[in-house]
Figure 1 (cartoon, rainbow, N blue to C red):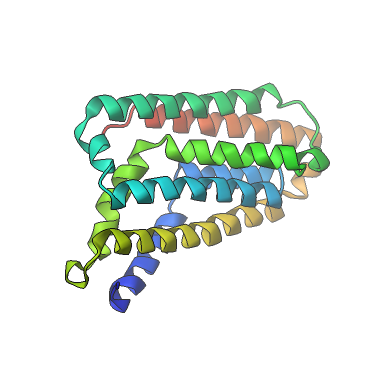
Figure 2: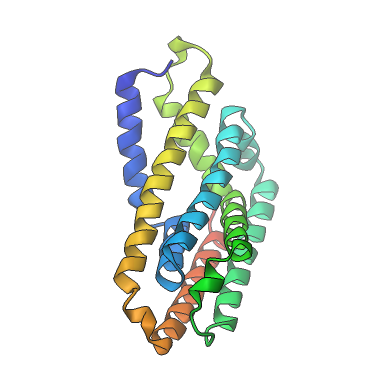
Length: 209
């Protein structure tokens, strides 16, 4: 089992990492601002589901492929960047549409947001490499079953992600709820969202291992 001291340190480090600005929590923040609290939470759940893949990859050594193979890393990186830019295009394309929370909170729309969050996360190879570097620091080899310890740490990280990201999305929605009553503000927020996503896509495309 994982030592309690290591676990407490891991929880603290995970909390700070979740708060640090990055593609995932920025995307959740924009969902909270431009759509709804529910949209932000569902997006968070999609992103967190993607972490299951990265945790499994780190626990069983698959992430080493991304760390050692530049071709594999670049393929996933460019596909992920293209997907971010595609989402940005969709936000810009619909920038003039009035905000309709009944549509934004429909089951079909929420399902799309969940899938978008999931795909965004798994198409970022840097997350796999991060997990491969981060999780082992809190593993105690003497306690045996290293893959199980890493899976447990991954689950803890996912819980922290859900709590922190959902809070960010809800807070963003509460702060922007009054502004969203003005159609022009919604338009500019969609433009801002597309700009942020394009920036994140380019940053991913230009990143290195």
